[in-house]
Every structure is written in structure tokens, then in C-alpha cells.
Amino acid sequence: MVIGKPLFTVEQIQRKVQELADRITRDYEGRELVMVCILKGAFMFFSDLVRHIRVPMTVDFVSCSSYVKSDSVGEVKLHQDLREQIKDKHVILVEDIADSGLTLNYLREHFLQRGPSSLKICVLLDKRERRLVDVPIDYAGFPIPDKFVVGYGLDYSNMFRNLPYIAVFKKST
Ligand code: IMP
Ligand code: MG
Image (cartoon, rainbow, N blue to C red):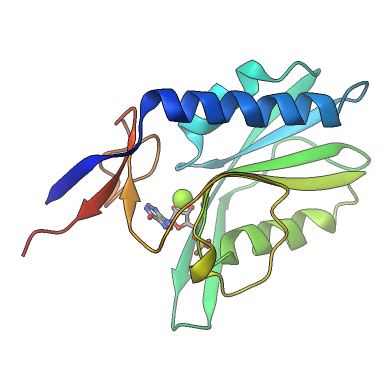
């Protein structure tokens, strides 16, 4: 297994996170937020992002996994639901990466049924060319090509989440 050199360094990530947090602060001025972390992948991004947002908020955590059955059919399973009510609240779902879009699409539809005042999506990485469902991404950090990446919360087999930077992962043959 090989971890390549950083695709995004610690400094690049921190700058981008600050930029996203500033945009969110501007957009939600005078309102209150429910920030939702999609575990496990978003944990590091989430904790950096929320500490830079200057808007009153509560935080909540959901855990889910997606199983792609074929190229066009995928299933998402919610292992841990929200603890808070989101009816009439302003909600932002925070995810590490949008790949097929199945996870975010599922969570979005699921949570919209609970009647939030608004529901937006924030991702650090956007692998656009892999998208299978058209889900609106309101805040996106970096667009990336179709490469498997690890670090800064992202894993291969639950490993490498602790790397402070993001790198391309290659399975050695
Ligand atoms: P989606 O439902 O296909 O958009 O999948 C999103 C999930 O797939 C993310 O939450 C990640 O856990 C995982 N994923 C997609 N691409 C990568 C990658 O390059 N590295 C690590 N995990 C990834
Ligand atoms: Mg994930």
C-alpha cells in the first residue's frame, strides 16, 4: 500500500476550511444553525469547520454507510440518527466527500421529510465525474479527479483517517 505525496497539504486544507466557514458565517448571519456531521469520514473536517463559524449553533452526528450494488443502484443505511429535532431549523449536512452522491441524496431526502426551514450541504471534496445522482452541493471545498484519496478523516478500510493532509492512495500490486 502506498500513500502518495499530499494532494492537499495541511495549509491548503486549513485555508479552504476557513474560506468555507466565512461563507457560512455570512450566509447565516442573524440565524441559528444545526450543523450535522456525517460520521466517520467528516469528523476532522467538521471539527475544524465549526470552530471557525461565527453563528450560534448546535451540533449533531449521524452515522451511515453506502453499499453500491451496481453502477447505478446503491443503498444507504443509517446506523445512527439525529438526536435533535430539526423541524423549523436551519440545517447544514457536513460530509467529507461527494462521490456517487447516493449518501448525501439519501440523507437529504430523509431529513427534508422532517420539515427543516432550510437544509444545505457542505463537502470538503467533490469527485464530480463519479456522480450518479444529482444532489445539490451548496458549499464545496476542492473538486478532485476520480482518484481514491485518504487522510483528514477519509479512510481505506478504516485506516489513514488520522493523516493531517489528503493524499492519493494506491494499492500496491
Ligand atoms: P457516495 O455515497 O458514493 O457519494 O459516497 C460517499 C462516501 O464514500 C464518502 O462518505 C466516503 O466515505 C466514501 N468515499 C468516496 N470516495 C472516497 C475516497 O476517495 N476516499 C475515501 N472514501 C471515499
Ligand atoms: Mg464516509
